[in-house]
Image (tube, rainbow, N blue to C red; front, side, top):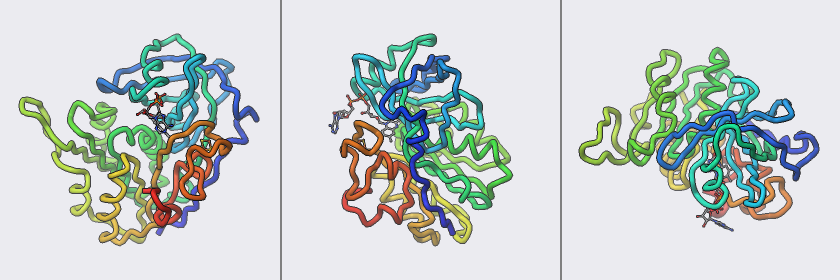
Length: 288
Ligand SMILES: Cc1cc2nc3c(=O)[nH]c(=O)nc-3n(C[C@H](O)[C@H](O)[C@H](O)COP(=O)(O)OP(=O)(O)OC[C@H]3O[C@@H](n4cnc5c(N)ncnc54)[C@H](O)[C@@H]3O)c2cc1C
Ligand code: FES
């Protein structure tokens, strides 16, 4: 049973400069799909980012604006930070025009994180859909790098179609790994498309799993519709809301608990979240 209380933000630790972006160099840009790119960044001042899996950064481009983007790489991989960014609007469109060598501003890291301390010794069921693999990837990398700290690790990932599958080469590595189990599914495959994995909703992958509810923590990150139907499959396996960790998205402005744009009932998604245990938010109107 997971007794994790999701840790509070360490926003106050980020140089004491909550509102002032620090400059980063784009080390590389990798196209993941037609609409998503992966940016690897280093700080120009050489300082560490100090991020934890589950946290987000406020990405800032002068004259354009800011947007919250989840950290997609684990701090165990070194002093760089990766962001998987979908083209969605003003800031992210501008970001997709940037090349390696260009500069970008960041604030953060902000928000709560996946509490890997309280996950130690547990079996992990890591379920993500669509863009939700971006923050989940940071946790998966962390778990890979500290593998002996955790029990069985099962990764489930769902995308709309084969063309929408993110981090394809890493998913292949995880599927071929003898240290963890990984299944990928897509909602639909159009005729003529080569796809030799599962087809159907991610919820179909859960009933056949052998889950020891007494020592399992489930983590869910994905589009809003996914949370309800995935949790409905987890309850019959014996998991309860305190064993289930979710990461929620809300429209954000400041990212540091000042503007009130991101409220979920009495909670601020940016500082009380984005990572919550389900029992923190399940009863709040509109949370899930
Ligand atoms: C904690 C967190 C983590 C995130 N992580 C990622 C990530 O890893 N990768 C990623 O690609 N995205 C991520 N997002 C989503 C990303 O922040 C949004 O897509 C963001 O809006 C993009 O900014 P933009 O300027 O490009 O788009 P915008 O120009 O802001 O437009 C994006 C969409 O938001 C709508 N919108 C604009 N203003 C408002 C408003 N006031 N209220 C409601 N809707 C509005 C627009 O109509 C449009 O549909 C994350 C969001 C949060 C909160
Ligand atoms: S984004 Fe301003 S309070 Fe959360």
